[in-house]
Length: 336
Image (tube, rainbow, N blue to C red; front, side):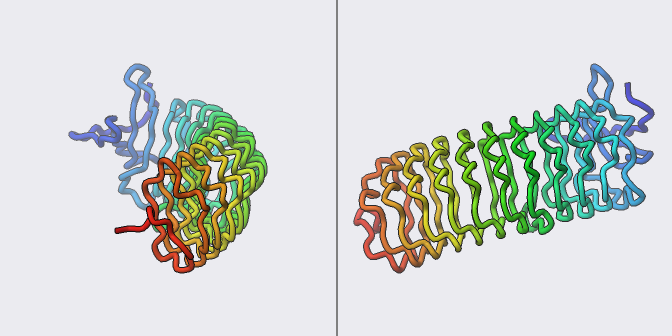
């Protein structure tokens, strides 16, 4: 049953993904919203979204002992939150944890890593977080980890990820966009056998990726957009035979692409737009029989194309505009 939680049911409850939310009208959680499971009468969701109390938790986050059955905890825009209450680690039913726009949050407690049923951990736009717990690999059920910045935000504090990252064997999505101080990925990433999406947009300190990345055999999407310091891709990228989308746009330090790219027989989209140091593409790109879109716009130093690229059966969208050094463009690729 609900444990001594003062409730107010508005005339028109907030509708979030079709669920009815109830407003808490008093106490340490005043202004927050909950969802109650009608069969058990337990609170299963707690959210600060749309909470008008901008001054909440200046003295610290209260305990969550009144909500032992929480499945979703959303602390969005908790601007005075410096650290999580240790009782978060006792929420063994928790599936989803959102710590977005928590400007002063600097670290996550080790107790968080005991949440054996946690499937989604989102930390975007919380720029002060400089590290993840070494024991984060204990989150064996985690499917999605999102860190870094969203629209207009970034993280300049995180420089490395713990080696235990590779122990999160259920992980399917790893999103590290705008982690601008991140210098490398741990080699243990190669143990993420279920990873389908890796996004590292605007990770501007990354110079190379580990060879072990090629062991992520289920990877479908790899986005390295605006990784301005990236100099090369590992040759092992050719082992990612399920890869469909590879984005390298504005990787302005990238000087070459590995020959092994030709092994990516499911690759449909390849973007190297604004890769201004690229001088040529490997001839093996002519083996990309599933390639649908090739974006080479503004590759100013690109001098030659693979001889057999014109015969790719599914290539329909191609952009060579502003490739001023290109000696010759096949007739079939020229715009009318």
